[in-house]
Image (cartoon, rainbow, N blue to C red; front, side, top):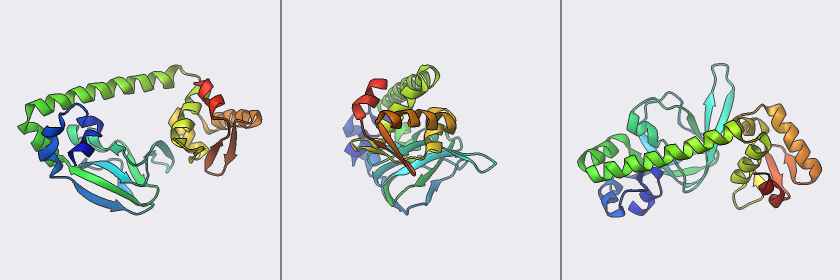
Length: 214
């Protein structure tokens, strides 16, 4: 179990042997397709590591509109920052399909860090690396052309496959553009023979062409 904890960015710099006491406190929880894992504004009670299934991280407006921030799958994790600062959840998370997650409660994590100064320092190092990566992502959003941002996102969503399962509206929210602009770019790519637009997804026909845009 400690090897799994090492895959969580928060613990990436913590020696595996120091994670043994923390690993004893993990537990499993299942979520049905469509079930909300937690809502935006909830108290941060735990962090999560996905063993199976997919979830989406999204923001909701008072008017009922939603913007998808990320789609996460097996081996990915979420909720770690809230368990450290104690602030309300900044986004909601919903299971896109039946999901299985490992959960580590906030109280157990804080007790672990309070009792192991070396591990707490290692967590600080991991957070610094995460912030650097976040700065790089922000630079992408601010300075990369929309086509490059969109190409990177559909390639990430497709993973090792050839289909990015995401609506155009959700894609727009993830790349910081309007749905209309995203639709125009996808239309250009479709005419070039690089993609095919489908309901709720984008089929990648020419992956090298998309990679060349980035």
